[in-house]
Image 1: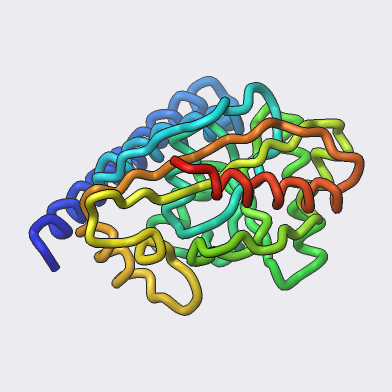
Image 2: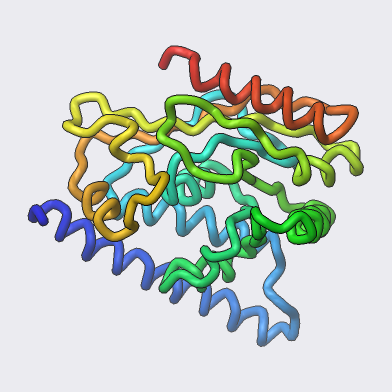
Length: 250
């Protein structure tokens, strides 16, 4: 481990502690007002945490295109666990994550505090239950950000999008916003693929590698929101839009 990785590890720990304390303050205020923490407040808290975590990791981020305004579903490609912080930094929203994320040490409780919706990719029943929860978040005025590939990749291609989670937007007549996530590593020893967390990569060694990287800029590139006639059309068109956004020259 390099000194840079060690120092950023300390900063990450402090950032996560600040996130916990900030949520505790938010929760206490809601208790005193005798109401639960609202989904919108959780989404705003996630944006604060995303920006703080990126700063601790030394990751710059840039938003391209027009971030969606109002309630929408945002469909993006998925490169690693970093995508949650990157997307949260770009706008307040709720996330859909695989079910085991909620069981991770530290990050699991934080994701639950942020109002994350969990889905078991192997269960069709779970996918439709998740769709119902997405509809609930949308009704509460919170945009929902999800990764319809169903897994993270090495960035070489955008995998086929699963269509189930597009149903809430279609049924409510809401537009779907495509978003491409890219890792720029100009001047860094690492490539985008090195920073992607996919396959059987172990979490801890990968995080240590990320902590030591310099010259890393994360990009969230938003496309034009679009209405879709059905969930399958939404999946196909959103996939093509995200793939095209990934190919756009920086």
